[in-house]
Length: 263
Image (cartoon, rainbow, N blue to C red; front, side, top):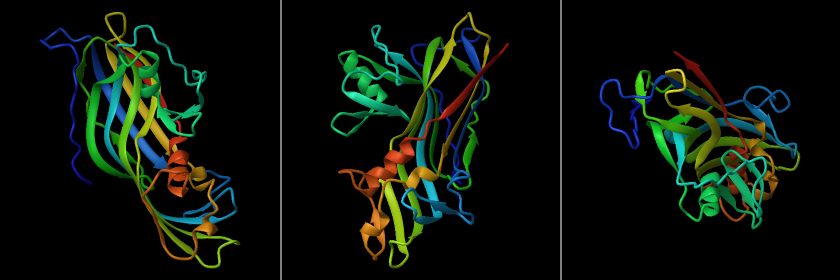
């Protein structure tokens, strides 16, 4: 595993001793795959919604950063993923489904609602540039204990990624022979809302733990027998193909985040 590089982005504040508004006591991120009881056939084999069996040999995601972010320039704009604005449907994993079928990030929607002025700005950033093996899980502790925090309204946690990779063998009644499957797909990662103001009215210490668990539905939505008998490598997440469906299923995972305070 390559060394984890850590950076603290302190926006709008230059610290001198005693001028911080808070302290980061813990910051962790655990990313993993768990097929779930209904899909786990044992020995790494996953049952799909089409009845196929996917023997998963490798699954990883390349993560660039994990950030605690503040929404700046919103000018009173509100966005609730549970009640998306007109033109958008189901929202999950930091994205909403637009009427044209595309996936649009929460930040893009907020920027649209604000006339382009709003954006999420990283206040605390753990720079990883790390490929995480989801079958083993990780990376865990991000190592920023004791970092000083500026005054901020931390409203989002983002796991910023670049690539989803994996290898599997697919078998099933509709397949004449096992299908060797691999993928290397562009992937933006996940985000979730948090409620973590940093100011003089809050306890000084802030601890944040987040987890992303991809489940066995990852391979749903595709009739794998339609891809033929030759080995298939997916590198395109566009045009409604199996690569896009694989990415959408991964994005459907909703991160869970716990925020705690201490004096």
